[in-house]
Length: 139
Image (cartoon, rainbow, N blue to C red; front, top):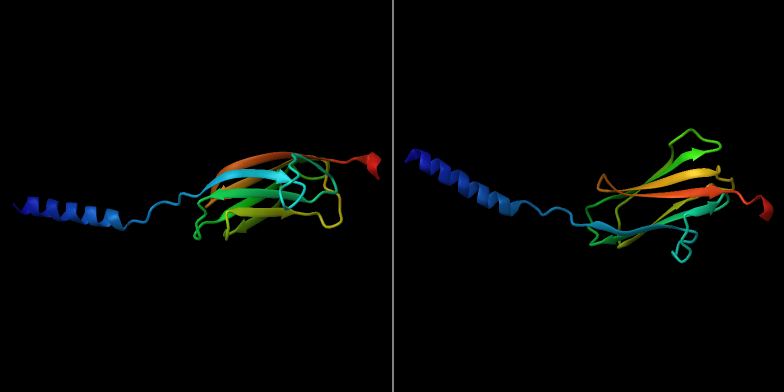
């Protein structure tokens, strides 16, 4: 009888405590892309060496207790070490659209291959590849 009481108490405790656990974050990245402009009207995966890079992310059901991170990486370029991390941006989104920006303040980007890694609450959700070239004839 004592064993049944203990099992009953544990069962009731588990039922009650399972109702008190908060639900998991259901936020997902619905779209993510690279653009030449912060409005997202000029999509690209091939930037000029003088460009500003914009990564625009749209979240499905953003949550005020989540973080979104963009890690900009020079994978293989003519002037940097392989897989060189250029910058990491981390935000707590206040809307469903987040615009990340990477700028090289008056300098040219090294030509080559790049990636931006997107993390939602520390979990990698997207990787976007892009290239940087230099148009020597436009100068």
